[in-house]
Amino acid sequence: MDKEKLLKNLYAELKKGSIVLVVLAKLHNQHYGYSLVQTLTDDNFAIDQNTLYPLLRRLEEQGLLNSSWEVVEPRPRKYYEISPLGKEVYQSLKETYLKNTNIINNLIKEH
Image (cartoon, rainbow, N blue to C red; front, side):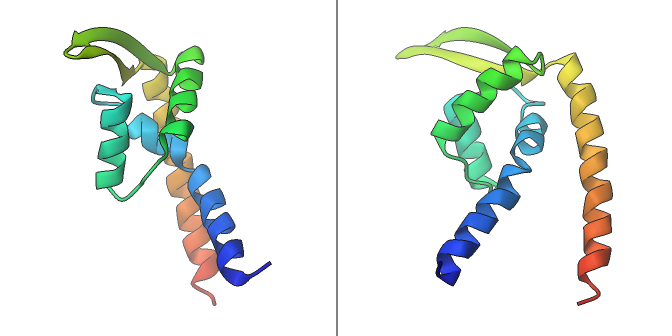
C-alpha cells in the first residue's frame, strides 16, 4: 500500500473516533442535517451526509438527540438537538476525550 493511501485511511480512523463527540457538541444548538454539515465544514471538520444522517438516526434511537419537524419552504426539515441524556453522555465523553488527549500528548512529545 502506498503511503498516501495508508495515511488517508489512518486519518479517517482518527476522525471516526471523534465524530459522535463533535456532533453532540454542535447539537447544543438546534440544526437540521444539511445545516450541521455546513457548520462542521465551516469549522474544518467536514463530514459526508452519507455518514451524518445514519449517525443522527442512531443517536436519536439511543435517546441522545431529540428531533422535530418544521415546515420551511420549500420542504419540511427535521431539526435535531441534544437531549438531557445526550448532555450527560456528552459531558462524560468530553471528559474522557480530554483526559485521553492529555495522555496521548504526553506520550507523543517524547519522540
